[in-house]
Length: 180
Image 1 (cartoon, rainbow, N blue to C red):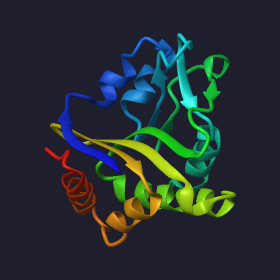
Image 2: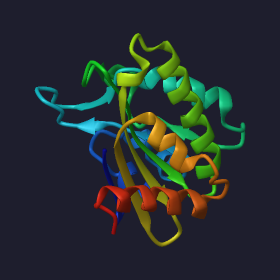
Image 3: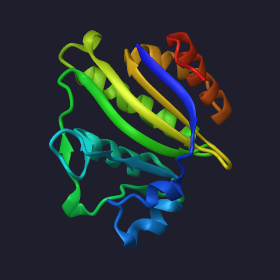
């Protein structure tokens, strides 16, 4: 298991100012409750790319998020590209989320992980990777996890509020020796 938890300078505004975000989308991205953040410069790809399955996850978010919450996928449709990053690794990618929406997102992510594990040909061997940018009023907590989905799901199982979820993620990072 690899896990880290740290404070960063990221914000919805800094994501909205990335070069791949079309100017017409910048305001919507800056005020979004959930942002699916693409990888930049992955391998031979010059532009932004998403992990394979991101469109499926985005569709689940659109279906499951309350209608008053905004989801942003900050690229033009023509520039949207998914790539397979690893064979037996469930890569959810980077998700920026406001702390108020984190409990809702955590449930949706857990549902998605369970669905993917059940669909896997070798469920016990599948690892996962996710990065959450929890956007709080004056700071951003960046949580990165790569390991067994079971450990990730167990760490979040009893957490209901945003501060409990952040605390659970921090404990997971400390367990792996990478918490701050």
